[in-house]
Length: 335
Ligand SMILES: [Zn+2]
Image 1: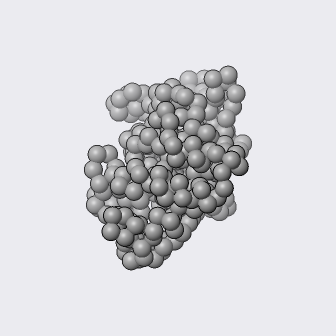
Image 2 (image 1 turned 120 degrees about the vertical axis):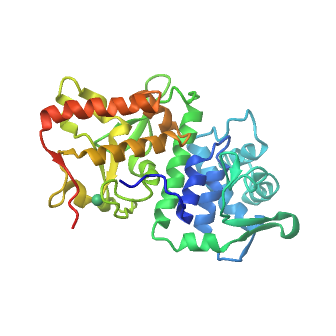
Image 3 (image 1 turned 180 degrees about the vertical axis):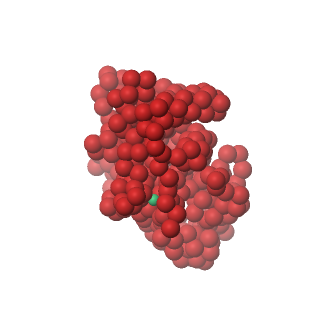
């Protein structure tokens, strides 16, 4: 059984760590991540703040239009400027000038901080004091050459949507409950008046936590191609009708991204119950999500238990009940 937490992180894992595990008081980190992926600078290139500002501001303005709350701070002069631009009160040049002046104050130095420390690899070097910008490293250009690059943009966007939704609904993170709609494969939550609010595609939200791979066989998944990935119920959906199991199978804890072959190819899983080693893998996946300080973290805890031992009991209890009605289990066929 491979552990979900690898010992020597790849560049892609470092990048995902920044996006998925950083604590956020504002959405600037997501905006900067998307901006760098969109600009695709080369190794050694100096990106002046004036080069970054137009794309960085564009990303924030796009989000402010649908989610005005982009920070947990009571006010931010930079966000006020982005808001004014989105309402056509200031022109593009003023937006860019203000972004250069105010937009990067807390993000450039904080970008590589995950937890309380900087990560071991840097995607740029801060040269603002000497050259007025950031210098792109070899690590960033190596990241850009990865086949997962299109996923990384979508994941940054998905994580941004989840975080801003939690802020906007003004839900303390222990109250937010994210649900899954199996017909549209979207994650949604309910606002104060119980109106449904779509959060993001469940594919994009789940993908980063599976490191871009099929949950079952580890084949690379490209989520911008819907034909390549299914959102699968690990405990099959039909168990919903088993009296002692019920609707819990619709929880995020039970959703995994699967390649088409594993889910519904020859010898595919379909609605079979997975083997015990796969259950252990699900438990690891969920613990990995819970470590992430992500709105999904609280949803998972609410659905499966406060402590790791409770969550193991929860999974085991459902597994035992499922075995009582499924009789056979499914295992990945190693070719
Ligand atoms: Zn697979």
